[in-house]
Image (tube, rainbow, N blue to C red):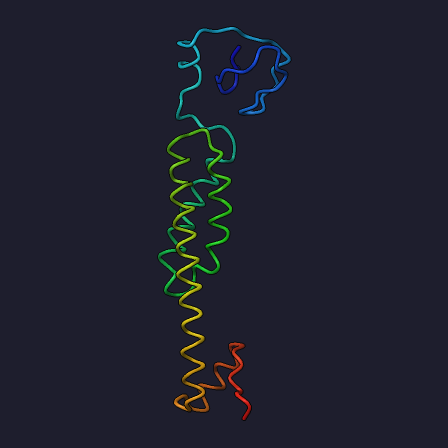
Length: 151
């Protein structure tokens, strides 16, 4: 038998569709494969997963593009989560976008993290060598970076 909502084949006697969760208890409809293809096109997407896939993809792009400005630190994790949720979409195009968003988000997060660590190391070296003036030290402390190296 086939689900009347998503058109996928389900086990005879099922009460709920394992793919879309539709209630199958009301009436069970037997249809042939051609009718299913017409009733539920493959690109039709049911549920919030399509939005998650798209937002995850956009956050992935922002994460990677903004990694130089450390934006990837804030957008990487939400991009990863939404992309993973977006992979549950029934639309193959949305699944591909979610997979790309996942990769972009991960790379943006990695690049931002590495650049942030490099920045901290460089600033620490500059402070220890005394090449940063007092105003710069005050600004770094304002940002929450402890540069008081035992002085």
